Amino acid sequence: MSFSSSEAPCHKRKSGHQAAQGTRIPPKEETPMPAYAKTRKGLEEMEVRRGALGPRARRLLILADGKRDSAELQRMLPDPAFAETLAELEREGYIEAVAGALAQETAAPAVPAPSASARPAEVPQDPVVRHQMARNFMLNTLKTFSGPYAKLSLMERIDASRDGAELRLLLEDWMKAMNESSAARPQAAALRARLEAVI
Image (cartoon, rainbow, N blue to C red):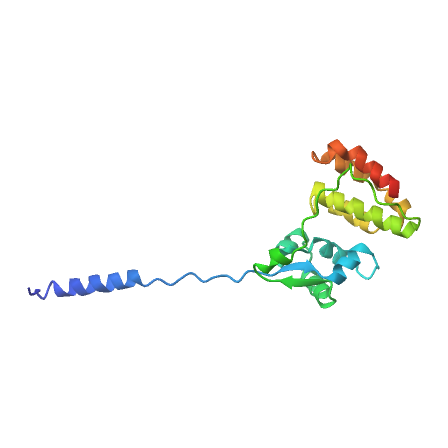
């Protein structure tokens, strides 16, 4: 079977069109941004406040949970000096970048909700240790029942407290936050009793 001269170019154009349709450039995969997690040094700084970090750096350290990348952290802490603060924390060894799927594996495990019915640990006599226990209890309950940054201002004031007397000044604000949480409200009185046993 032969083609006329008028039919041949149509066949060629069709073939070329089919070839163009068959050649598709795969979408470029975007490299995920690394998440940032606290290092051992960062966790120790959270437990025993040494005063080595300024308020901006400490706020960022609190939020570095191993799941949030730099973009999300910056949305939560809009600050012209954000990049500088992030780099400083990483350089000083308080946080580390965790890339890709490893972020979920290396992130700190979720802290179970503090139980109001659990028996409190033996209360130490050292007021410094008692202050640390009370401060950590207040921070952990806020993170658990209110979320990691819903009460960020209160968490910062608790974290900046120097002794039990300063924590007691924040007790009512903490209690208000517990009563605002539907999960914490039924056990708010018991949680307060546990806290007051230490504070």
